[in-house]
Length: 451
Image 1 (cartoon, helix red, strand yellow):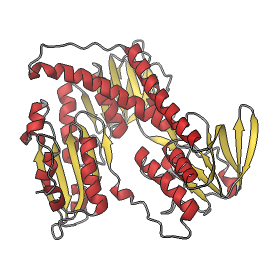
Image 2: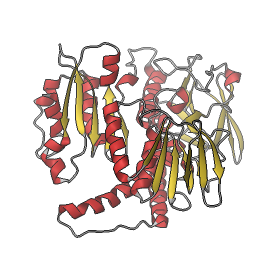
Image 3: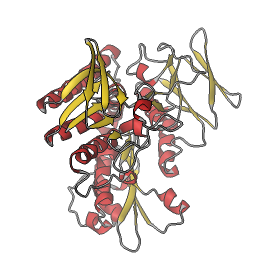
Image 4: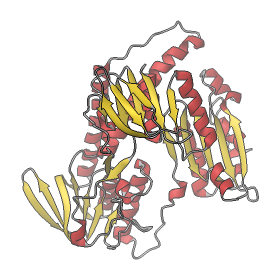
């Protein structure tokens, strides 16, 4: 069995290593960075910067924990070096794992030249691979509209900001989804003034309004200016910065502007038409529950598939694809349930959720039991001098089965794992209640919310 993978991000690398362990001959073609551009050029650098901002915020809060006041100062060059060190180590580790599994790692650009043929173009020339199965996992790139003159200097795309050439005095962030609010938190933590353009009437329009309200409150406390109900339509360079024009006539002014308005799939140069692979009107490749395209032996995963744009989802898709390539046609194959994927937003406080949301349940007219416990009632949150946020659990009132949950507060991204496991395994709230958790910890709020 010969398996070619185009794209070395979380989906591609997971599929490669798992398929190799199952005895498949695997070739992985990666154009930019092993480990994935979206992960190593976006996700990891942003979280590293957020961690630095969090350390600065903690030092300020430490005054209320019995310590002398401290005024932390940011060293942008050292931060840039730290980010490079982290991403370099992760990329090297992924490369080493691939090579340890005898994956044929090809540095170059891959495209289809037939249903079973993949052409790899490298610095040394071209190489055509004849294979039995193909995975396309080339990810996405930041969306940049025509009205945004991105120059990497004053007008930034996301990948210009890890970190930027200089720390903005005042940053105008365009986009109030997950990426946008993380940038607001990141730069406000680093001491920058921030204006956020919010096209709806709340940040994070797809999230629970109660969750969004906690984040908005923190933003306002930090001095962030929220321009709600405004959609950016143009950016002008000025003598000392930028002016962002909105559709309602308002103008947001700052020293820099940053676009965080989504991404577009990298599907245009894959040669899909030569193999008859279908794409939708947005450039995504539709897939079925096995991640197969309309051509059964050609798979798509990660951002390219148009499913949840999460590294964790891409990795699991890659694993499932590897299994399906090898044994999926002969044995029962467990499908992915995207509705049960946990996600997190690394703001301060952190936000995490999984499964059925309270607002969605009510919109569907579904009867649910919703229980909520504030972290302010837990000893550990008071010890850490950060009682913000809450735990909310949604369950079936008849059976007690956990259907979903939301957490707002410190370490929410870690704590949501308990609820995610309950949702995936079909556990009851009583199973969480009867878990004898460590005291004092934030996780105790999970048991209290389940009770």
